Length: 247
Image (tube, rainbow, N blue to C red; front, top):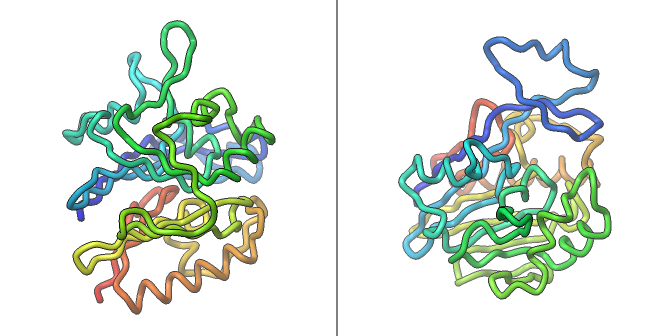
């Protein structure tokens, strides 16, 4: 399988939940608001034997009149229409902003016309009920009653090789994925497992729905990955987009 990180840049975020661009070469984290976190925003493409998978969908920012996620894909030789499946861990705005695009009339449409989107039904219900600032209801409401969307209910398997599990750790209906093909396992933990250092250290985050559970799951997955030779994808890691254990 081929992994392609689609970096949208580095940002700081504080309790306002506003993502502010950060230049690693010139900006000073200490001059940002107290408690600001430094994060990458980085969806992934995984090319398998039968699919071109998109894992989460970024902030949904546009540059030069085009969705940044589309630009990033094209720079890697992939057209938006080439994406066959969009796998969503959850619908926080920094992960779900790029699932849709707005036309000139202000209407939203799914950003990947030939893809099947996989979303937990309870996650969408929760997101629409909760709304701003964590969720952008107008951007994700296009998922409702859409024939391109497969709504999931709990754990399961897609096409016999993509396994998903609802953790309820970072957010109440957050899910994680294992993509297993040709004796290779890619693990995508979304915001349950967002950065390499959080895997290596015991860390309980106040911003998680269940921080203790997140920490315990990270420890479990890290050991399993070490034993079984997984590749971990890190959505919010500034330096290390993915890490592979040699089996």
